[in-house]
Length: 319
Ligand SMILES: NC(=O)C1=CN([C@@H]2O[C@H](COP(=O)(O)OP(=O)(O)OC[C@H]3O[C@@H](n4cnc5c(N)ncnc54)[C@H](O)[C@@H]3O)[C@@H](O)[C@H]2O)C=CC1
Ligand SMILES: CC(=O)C(=O)O
Image (cartoon, rainbow, N blue to C red; front, side, top):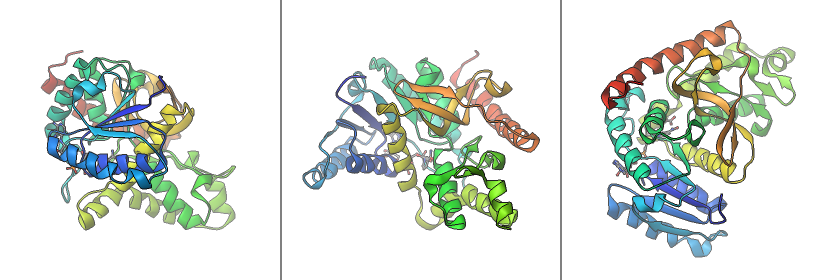
């Protein structure tokens, strides 16, 4: 990676701008270019952010631009497209957003872009696949945010329930970023103890934990019902992922990654823990899954595979 850390954001809506605002506050990048189909919106957003720079600790170039800006960018983040309306599932956005993301992927590709693409638009697992296929780039260079946000939600809620810092909670939400995601309890840790041991020692009720997981799964629906969209949580999750790449942290994050024959499944993007490095995804970490977890993973995989089949037809992809 070169000295000037450049990010291009495509889609300057609530999610994209929450990420931009988060990056402006943490710093860690040198240049942020904003692209939107609504060019005036992108320009207005750049103006607004720039006016905050004199009071920010971090200096960076922020501007509106076009797809030529992708050519020398390190990371392109896709947050464009429709979001869920009240009661709508993420998968119901497939048709409308596949068209949008296909078009955007072609524009990124023809710019000569050589870097890493991060996808946040929903349904994120399916759209990551669209980007991967349409752009024809290495699997390690396409990262969907997957269950990164769900995992943060879980860590937050568990930390509140157990009264332990979220830094000391290791949790992995796997599968689709959507209704078929699940938590692997046997792979959840509080400090150096498994959560199951921790709960038994304190006579806590496993039903409480299952309720907490239901709250995680329903969080987007609850927030959308109250305020129409979710954005701060994913904004800071994107920040974490971007800085993990630039800083070559080798941190393990739950993201949507392309699986070939890992986990016995293949040709799909799905939420799994991955080691993140400056090249993108260094490795998918294989978690031991018990029978219950494996069945849930298989279900999630089947749901995504069915939708992927439809999407491939729509894109005219046979392989
Ligand atoms: N992965 C995750 O955890 C999360 C994903 N999302 C998803 O992020 C996406 C964006 O959500 P919001 O920001 O709330 O929506 P929004 O409606 O606020 O913003 C979408 C932006 O995309 C732009 N856009 C539409 N078509 C475009 C195109 N062809 N090229 C460039 N820009 C285009 C629009 O002009 C708009 O500025 C949705 O798909 C939503 O479901 C939202 C929250 C969490
Ligand atoms: C909207 C969405 O995907 C989320 O908040 O999880």
